[in-house]
Length: 77
Image (tube, rainbow, N blue to C red; front, side):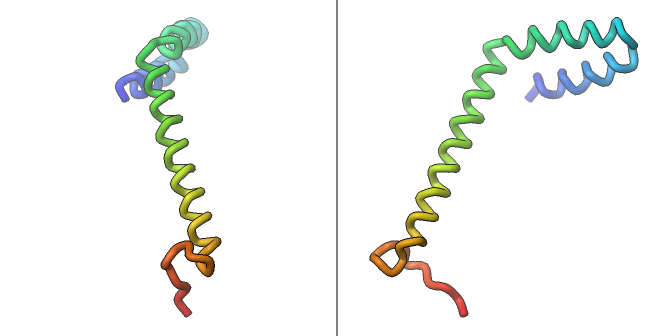
C-alpha cells in the first residue's frame, strides 16, 4: 500500500517539477515496478482474483442445474 501512495505522490510532485521531475518519476517507477514487494503484491492480487472468479463460476454452475440436484436456491416470484 505504501508503494501505491508513493507512486501517487511521486506523480504529483513530478508533474509540478516539469520535465526533470517527470524523468525522476519515470526512473523511480522503474525501480518500484521491478521490486520484489510489488511483484508479490501483484501476484497476490491475481491469486485473489482467480479465486473469486472460480467461486463465481461455481455459483453459476450450481444455479444453472438447480432442477437437477444443483443449488437449493429457488426463484422468488
